[in-house]
Length: 283
Image (tube, rainbow, N blue to C red):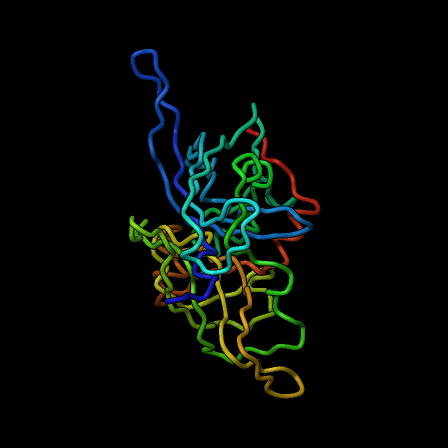
């Protein structure tokens, strides 16, 4: 059976601390999350939440990351997900006192006012990006599926309250080890899409925001779109609404106090980081 290729979009992320035992370096797993592949100008980027890679305020600063992603070998034009294979890419997260990942220029320090409102310390926007182009090229890999500009939400599209969406990720790190595809987790639109929540580039959805889902893509998939001039029908629409930030992982009051509200960062943050992002420096 052929599957929709976007089942191969999300990547499973594991982070590691460096530990020295008996004079030898070992890597201890300390965290997990989800990411997804974004393609822009012939480059491939891993998009995830910043807090998946670093929360300096609680001394969570893993040294290394392992990414499981679906890809095919270069030169093969493979469209179906099961014609691709799961590969592992590992890389260091730090180069001296600077991160190899990029963050938004406004996210160098926590936004304490926003953090006070939601009950969790966050650097805002809570999105980080890793350029995987050279790592994939060195292994001769081409991602099986990637988000591109054509998957961004057009300005004239309208989403009604309660619109059915889905998060594609790895809750609690769970997946089928024989075929590590992400799970589809239902979500509904809770705050108006296109309106900044608390003045930040984010909005709210209601979803079971389990640990491990942070960094997942929030997607809309259907055969019709509601636009200003009416409903548009098509064979299939797939749109990226944003980067999901799991409420359970953040332990925030929005999630526990409002019955499962989770923050989602608008996709425009991705292009801003690619264009003008900065590396985080250890203080």
